[in-house]
Image (cartoon, rainbow, N blue to C red):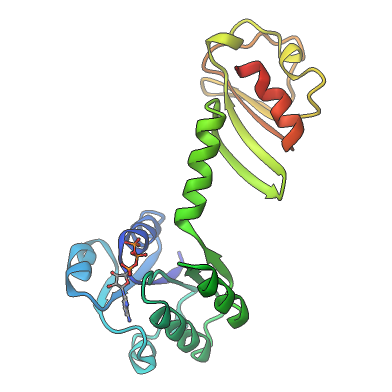
Amino acid sequence: MGQFAVIGLGSFGATVATELIGLKHDVIGIDSNKKYVENIADQLTHAVIADATDEHVLNELNIQNCDAAVVAIGEDIEASILCVLHLKNLGLKKIWVKAKSKAHHMILTHLGVTKIIHPEEDMGVRVAHSLSYPMVSRYMVLEDDHYIVKVQISESQNGLRFNQLMDQTDVRTLLHKRGKELLFSIDPNLILQTGDIIVVEGLIEPLRRLSKHFK
Ligand code: ATP
């Protein structure tokens, strides 16, 4: 079980905080707005109304003893940066920060935070990918154009042999799932069924070739 601080309890911060609680971690949530703190107080280990730009407050709350802090202050970039500076001064090693703009991102890069998050942009990219490739239910970017993708088999691929689907795509299949059964080594003659799931890995061009079977 880890200990985390979430600073800024708007919709992003509150989601991070409650998800961490769901994963059985201790979470201290901090927000300068009483209403946001009250909304979530009963779900977190501690919830505090405080100004996170005040280093003494952060010190008193022992934030430095947390495994990591997520700074989810959005609009007030100055407050976000000050808070990060204080967390660094207090010796916190893992600091994840939500960035609102390019300038904010650049400053955070110079401050040397652990991770900079752009939730709106990331979600926008995911929505665009989902609209463009509806058979992709999840994906993960390994590098710039290298992905792991979870693909759902639908009516139009039902009855296809596995190697008919994958032939000449240069995409590697990591697993096949039917119901609760997982296969890591797949028979090329396997007949695909609606509802099957395959998880594949490959570069964007080979993945595009595979996607043509889903049109
Ligand atoms: P979201 O999209 O997550 O709802 P947002 O990006 O619109 O949020 P804001 O609403 O500006 O960002 O800030 C998120 C939270 O951070 C707010 O609940 C706000 O009260 C809180 N906050 C802002 N400044 C401070 C501060 N100095 N100390 C603590 N909390 C702060």
